[in-house]
Image 1 (cartoon, rainbow over the protein chains, first blue to last red):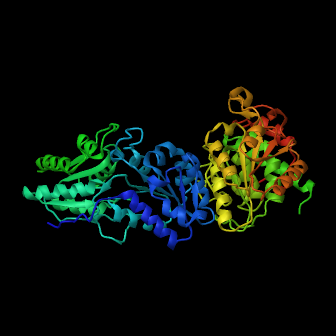
Image 2 (cartoon, rainbow over the protein chains, first blue to last red):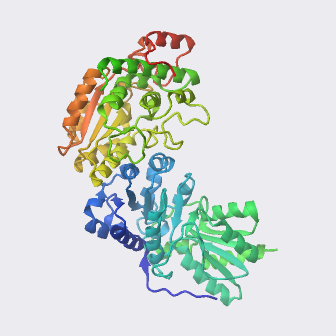
Image 3 (cartoon, chains in turn purple, green):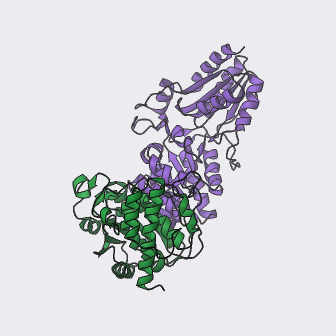
Length: 318
Length: 281
């Protein structure tokens, strides 16, 4: 089984900051907006290097989304930065009308997504944002898994013309994908080849899926792990090709099972190849305070949970 | 440059367009549209430095954003009669497969529209974003925007209004249509806003009053003053006092025609008060 090395824990939000720094040097049309969370979003470098292209809007996310929509008129490529909760639920109608329906080239960059925001608790831990964003016609939805991939995705979305939701997080997690990789929107990444079960994971759950695959391998179960960084448009073919081989699937995400990656995968399977599926996701609940590791354990979003879900889904195979 | 009589004639024709558009589909918003007919005509015929052909980025020309998108009939009529799309297309207002949606949108590619509006309170932010990009592009042209007075009840406006002064966005002229009416009644009854002038001044804007907002000469004079106040470090607000339903006697001074179309008989009365000048579509 192919194995991956953690080159050192890093936060995905710093990958975003690094990508934005790079864009500052290479693309003069890139502008950045932040709603009083520059440090949390790691936008300090861009602000210091390009003060004329950086816009501090204060604690006013609705205005930030509208400003970003307007800035595209005349050729700028705005990147907005705030927490995932305030990037989506708080400003849904602003995104819907001024950005999505108006098809503006805005990049909504959202940190502190999901439970791993930790101690601040449920007011700040959004588990509904993937669903909210994927429901908007024309919106691309990306949830990256580590520092290197988040940096690559940040750079790639500047080259794509259209609204994008880029979701990442707060904690330092394993950094294992290649440095200076090319990020292809909508193209799933095969991490391991397997024949017994397909595990598709997004965001922080991708590393957990690899850890689960190691455990399963020791038990004689061969898992095919796929990193679905783009939830919309979904790489239907990668999923269908894999389940044609394995005959069952586990989806894993730091999100509610309603509206998330799992539901998107279930839709593809129901239409083309009905397949037993288990969902590693939160079960229609809000989060709570705690350390990221405690929360991921309590809500069943780690390697153990993926192993258990795999054993369940294997029993449902013919 | 058209003379005042030509602008008056166009305004009369625009009123006919508005009445006929909403009558045909028995829906739409004639009251606010009629109240802003003079403003739109003056803006597109005289005030804005604009190009004849539409380009989304609008570099090197003044841009206009309509925030209170429900007055789409007046916007569509003036855009068509300013050459952005065929006047005949006004026939398709609110019909299936039309570019003239109930509220303005870029989605169907109608020339002249740069953002969707209708869900209220979003236009200030968008207009300010476009103004910031003009500055980044070293483009000395101006951003114009129009907002309803009732619309100011939406909180996002005040985020944007605060932002504009704090960031010295002085290349924008935002006009408030002070007609004192909204769907449920007079703004003073629904949610009294106190002094709109005092609020804008407190937020750091320069405020210009146009007391006769249905008088083309008064509009031209007031907007020229507003333009002279741009580029001085502060955003500029124009308080345009208009009469909802202006030009059709039974529609004036009431919220009743905010979102209601005239019937056949009412249409005939309205048209009889606004003689055909440039030819109906």
